[in-house]
Image (cartoon, rainbow, N blue to C red; front, top):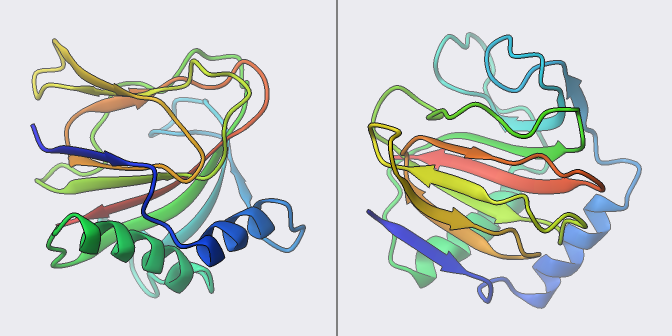
Length: 176
């Protein structure tokens, strides 16, 4: 399994901009009443680049895309990760919505890679991203959020736990 974790790749100016964004009332987040399909597990999302599947029209959806792409590019450059195309990017903000976590899922039905940039230290430390094997029968890795930590892995089935208190902020990129 391909997996890289790194909590020391961002520049100080990028860290400051992340902090400013999270505490700035002008960073738009939109409520979605579901996380996956119609599961009813609500969360807040800032879609920067919409999924290619089923989308028509403009996929770019945010003035913040270039900033978060620069963070993603720093990680990829440091770890010699080749990117042919960014498929999707978003900032997700999760809270205690009454559920333990998301259903096990893959972000696309075709081969891809996943990059996560954790934007805060959740108050609830038991909010890992849990990566499974293709058959969803074995946990391969639990990735615990840490502010400014990046994690990149094959587009394997995964899930994460919602925080019991506080918020869990993550920038997500999928790519080939």
